[in-house]
Image 1 (cartoon, rainbow, N blue to C red):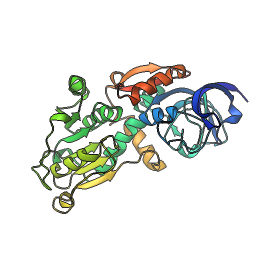
Image 2: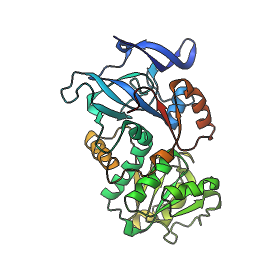
Image 3: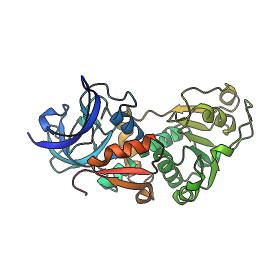
Image 4: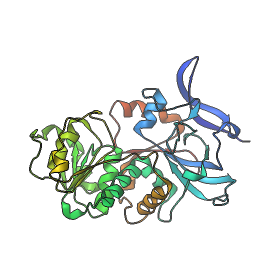
Length: 332
């Protein structure tokens, strides 16, 4: 048993509260693998969980953090040995089991990924759930016959963490990317990540017609709502729109015409419950042919556990930009 520091979230007689505590490894969720944490990251879901602004946790108390990477210190699974570098994203972290915001984490072997050659632990957490989501979208689109020849890929919410990594990942995979964002002051930065064109969402006028002239080969939509409804009539025949966010609303007013006339497909991207074989394939891509080329540029902030609450507040206020890396232990 080892004592360590963690950002722990409670919902009890004192209400919803969270902060740094010292706990023992015996208090961690069950699992075959105990790791010494090196890095985690901050996602919007983490900010919701850490502040109680969203109903993320299904039981309490839990350590926050839906991403984690570190080195194995003990394992009852023969596939993992002491000293192995591993990572885990989603898979119930900071939802049904303790997450990555602690100096130690205990993981379920089914969802623990050996760090693939070509990635460092630091790089894996800059990518984190955000980059995994973007890569999962690309995998599903290509499985449904998306190719660069169909035309440019629109990435909405392009200034966010998923959006920035999507620009880098899709362009690395050979696609022309058009970034759609409501923050034109970030356009030069998005172009530096690989965006061939940037469109101000405030100036983006949709006709409202069930079908319109083709503008995009496909799209990765982080927004939903009116944005999703407006994009679908602009997608090329047999193109795909992958939806992974709802910043613009959970409903959209559209028609069946893009689907039955052009054969467009709407693909749901649910990263947290992704099957293990797909996870393995995606992380192999992210360590090789889809590895983002601008990770250090996308990682705009590096913090410690103690700085988490301030970062949460900025993120929920819409003031964050890029990826925030949480440095916890060994920086290898």
